[in-house]
Image (tube, rainbow, N blue to C red):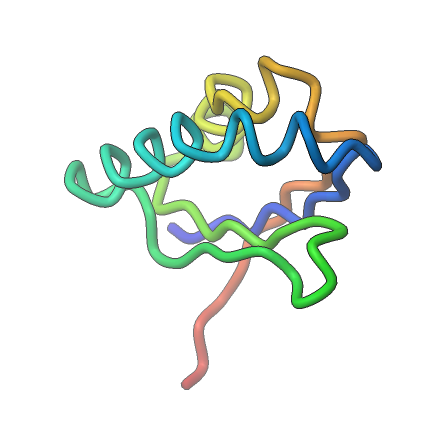
Length: 87
């Protein structure tokens, strides 16, 4: 099942830049393990959309909780919702 995480970042460009390499390495690991459908920042770098492939909402929440951006405090707020691909 797919779950979309709509995320808002803290307004701290230095923290975002410093943590981005470990965040992207984490996402690469998720992708390699079949747990990431798509991800990317919003054009204004105010946040991001991450679409997880998970068995449950709890698993998707755990994937977000383990993200280096979340652990470093980059994520100011987020919402994880089931998502259905149409196209």
